Length: 230
Image (cartoon, rainbow, N blue to C red; front, side, top):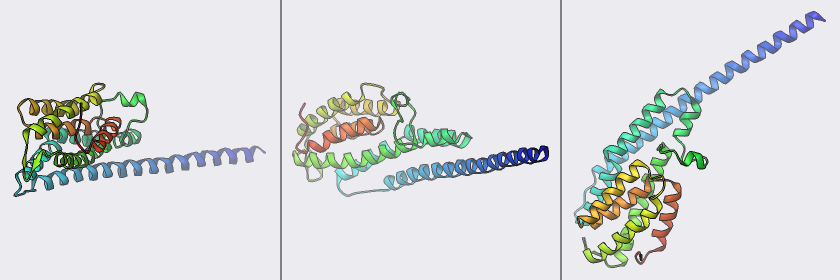
């Protein structure tokens, strides 16, 4: 009986060792794969930036759109955010932290208070900026603010003003640093009479805020296809 008990204890110990070894292997493998995926995502952001910087057009308005897109999607602060994320992920041995830094949206209200920018949120912001910038160009065309490859300042000013006011309502709480920087540039653009820049930077401010701001503001722009009224 005593011999059987000894064998049972040895079997339990062996099972524990095997479990620990396999768990360690799985954990290490997942950590490596997650870090590689993070590197791939950041590299794709940088590649998209290089593509945007190389775009040219004979239409002055389109060319200006490319320039503003480059200033926003390839800004020093956005690139810095990406490199800080990559550095933090590269140094981490905590799989759950790495997964968290790659997530798209906050897990709960407490997480939403964090000013951390994740890889997923940067990707969502980039996509949002591209989509909504295109929608705004359609709206500007609908309201007669675009004439061939030029702009009519009167219609542009009215749209840019309302755009700023609506965006402000989505940014007044828990404003993220990157969103704050872009919104400041939007206000500077409006105050200097560069309403086209103001409209682009307003989109960028919302794009890098959070999922709720993107959803609410995006619905507003999509519904107001005949201009904004404030």
